[in-house]
Image 1 (cartoon, rainbow, N blue to C red):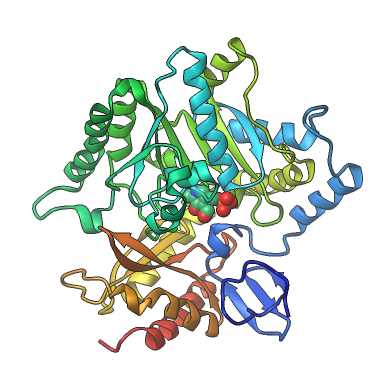
Image 2 (spheres, rainbow, N blue to C red):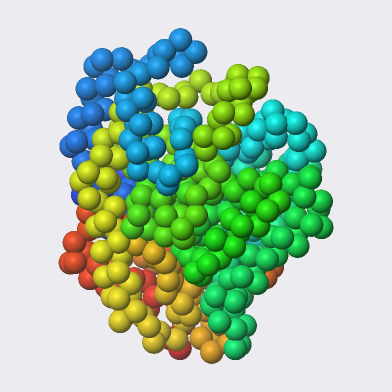
Length: 442
Ligand code: PLP
């Protein structure tokens, strides 16, 4: 009997034995193509010697020293390199242990900022219905993933949700993509006015929506309009790049492609690439200055802030993404993956949309392509797909999203940036096998 909690499957999953490159191997010797990096974590693949060497070197020097007493060379260098490559305006880095912690820190920083500048009424958050921002109470409060939120609702901070930017389903007949983006962005302004601008603290969004929607990018102009609205009403823009950041979409920060700079950004997953648990919250000069010149102390903290070994791993990863050109490779290989998916499944009767940016791609599964009708939630199509793909030796990330209160299904792909063309063929072949097994014939 196993004492491990939680278990995601009723029967015990296979035991992982080792990882090499784009593959994971279980203890029976079966090989799996890691087509989703867990959930967009393993951007460098497995067994990268540069990252493991950096970890070993740091472990030999010092594993841990509390940030209440010390800083460390890897934490300092990592923060410098992040700021060097971050959108202009982001200026400080707060190193944590994962995505939820980064979002939690972002929300608390936003709140403290308004207290410091004498606007204590600003406490409300606006986010989008199609979103996930983490599982701790603050982050969960922000996300629009209703089934995850419901049991904990009474404990959470006040958040309201507007429409996502989801052109596949939201764009109306005769409406241009641009007009659609402006229309849904303008919902933010209406919501700020409804709540009272003096009470609104932040708007929170994933630039490219991950787990709840399957790599849905915004349309052109959407985030620029969002930025304008936030500025007009003194509302902070918090971008959650936990899943889509760190090169995943082909630029180090996904928001670079939308031409906006957030006041606060959260990153994680690809930052440690799975070699160590690490995340970070980045904030603007102004926000940092308000606290430095005010109380002088951000009222937050976790034991493992700026962990030296995690920082050393992330530094090695970041060097590969930036100096090693791997983020650029994600853009090039991502375009090839998109073409291969379109060629193979563009006419599939149950694939409604193939989308994404870089090596962050989603396929939306529908019962009827013409009407875009999803499968009934009871059929749990995404679960069948996950199982069939896994049996075929492909790890992908199928999920049931929420479409206007109904459940829909999608498959998320987020393979390592080191993949080659032959691996794209392998993904397509294994996905075909899984679709043939888990989806109806027509
Ligand atoms: N934000 C986004 C967009 C995520 O996808 C996730 C995790 O999937 C999180 C936050 C939470 O990150 P973590 O699971 O590392 O706490």
